[in-house]
Image (cartoon, rainbow, N blue to C red):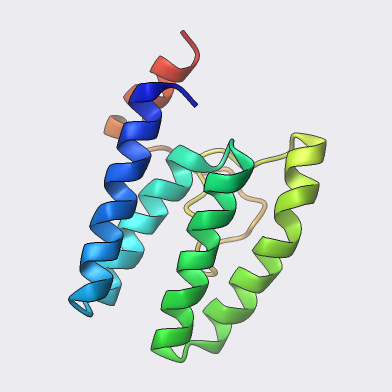
Length: 116
């Protein structure tokens, strides 16, 4: 992960944590989705976003999100080993764990920098 992507990832994670502390769970989750898109190509950042999503699912008492995040945490090693990561996927249980998704313009610009 280059410096620009890492900085953007850490910013989204910091915003998610601030929202978490303020009990603004919907906003925290939205920042985690953005962090997931930025960090999913690195094993540890990928796992970190799913652990936080699980934490929010637990706080919401959302069984679907809890189950979905546990499944995704179990799939992370396989996805990284096989190189089959659905780019753009926001990581929440409301979408298929295998579905690539369009990437927001601002995040796409950051990720394009990654390939330079």
